[in-house]
Image (cartoon, rainbow, N blue to C red; front, side, top):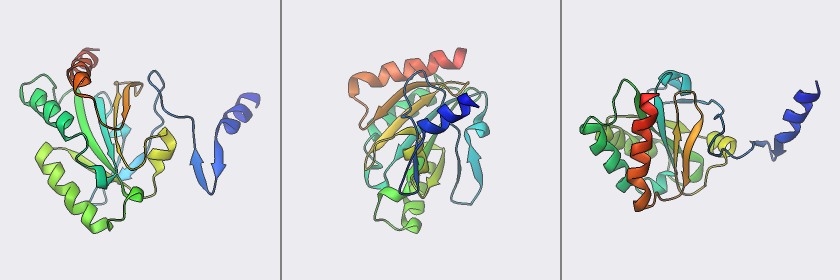
Length: 175
C-alpha cells in the first residue's frame, strides 16, 4: 500500500496531462501504444527481443537528426545493425506542430520508405510527457532488449557522438 502511494505521488497531474519522472539512462522505459498510418497498433512489445532506436520528432523538426539517421542507415546497409536484433522506428509528435494530421502522415510516409521503417503517430504528446522528451525538437532514445534506456538525446545528435551510439547499438545486439 505504502509503495503504491509513493508511486502515485511521483506522478503529477497538471491540466489533465500526466507528467511522469523524466526518462534517464539506466531507467526502464515505460511502455506505450501508438498507431501507424494504417491504424495498426504498435508498442515496444511489438519488437520484443530487439534493441530499439526511437526517433521521436516534432514534424517541424523532422530533419534535425537526418545526419544521424543517414549514418545509422549506412551501418544497417553494411550489416553492422542486424534486423534480427535491431529495429529503428520513428514517432511523430503531432501535438507539437501546426501541420494537419494528413500532411504529417504524408511526410512520415516518405521517411518510412526512405529508411525502410515504421513511423507511428502520437497525437496528444503522450510519450513526450511520459518520458520528459523535448518539445519542438527531435529526440533519440536507445533502448536495450529489456527496454532499459541506454542513451537519450534531447535535441540534435552531436556529430562526435554518432559513431559511439552506433557502436553501442552493435554491442547491445550481442547481449
